[in-house]
Amino acid sequence: MSKPKILVTRRWPESCESRLRESFDVVFNTDDHPMSRDELKAALRDYDAVLPTVTDTLDADVLGVEPLRCKILGNFGVGFNHIDIEAARRRGITVTNTPDVLTDCTADIAMLLMLEVARRGGEGEREVRSGRWAGWRPTHMLGTKVTGKTLGLVGFGRIARAMAKKAHFGFDMPVIFYDPFPPPQDLIDALGAEQCGTLEEVLERADFVALHCPGSKENRHLINTERLARMKPHAYLINTARGDVVDSEALIDALRNRRIRGAGLDVYEGEPRLNPGFLEFDNVVLFPHLGSATEETRVAMGMRVIDNIAAFFEGRPPRDKVA
Ligand code: DGY
Image 1 (cartoon, helix red, strand yellow):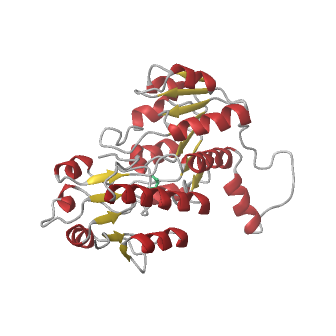
Image 2 (cartoon, rainbow, N blue to C red):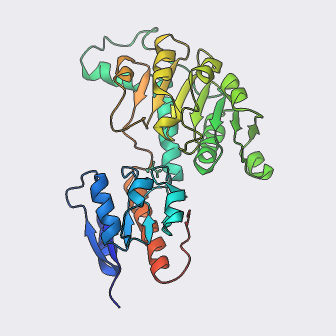
Image 3 (cartoon, rainbow, N blue to C red):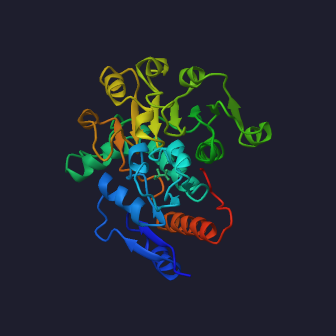
């Protein structure tokens, strides 16, 4: 029997590409460009499996292509808001993702953003590199202490829980959270976390608000002008989830009017484009979607995609089926 024909939309770590070559008739996007809608449509017409990432928009129009050859989308990433899951179901396309393997690294980036913005690490580095540093003095670049402050989590899935563990046990932080679908109470207790009845309560009580909810139609602009106004004026907002969970204009307005103290962002609405408003603030830390960006994690993600599609083509249920 001939090997399934696979298209990988972006370059992967070498060890993962080698494993793909062994098992499949695979084509890579050699120059690693973000694929256009037409290229994605052609891929769905010509390949048995397409392995996309967050940079590929697979909406109902793209998934509506005729004739359709693709039977499985093995997404390289845990978030799948760039794929219209209902449309995939209608077309009979299986969709898988890569949970678990990126949990800790993404929580690390949330911790790093929190520490960097509170302790003014980015500003400090810019000062040193530009030669403007005039030496130690008691009032120089004073930030906010992190240890002991309250961390408020919006969403309490795997990544939020990993952040809760690091913050609570490593930094003595009381952790509060809101999640409409909370995990069992023993899991909450083991992390020393407190469940809040509303998102507003988290926003009102936290010194650091970290977003860990999925990107979705429902969560688009979940953090808007009204909700930003609920935050304490000395609180910080951390986003490693999806850019459009935050209304960026509302956030820029809140920062401009000092209604919150600062923000640490890893994801953006319409990324890699950035609302230029963010560039005016020293109290905003901007990372280029680094959540899962470690060698170990990206290899683990690739291997997890391969496990999923291998299972599918061998007639076994893929471990991480989301549709
Ligand atoms: C994820 O895994 O969801 C990352 O944000 C990249 O898509």
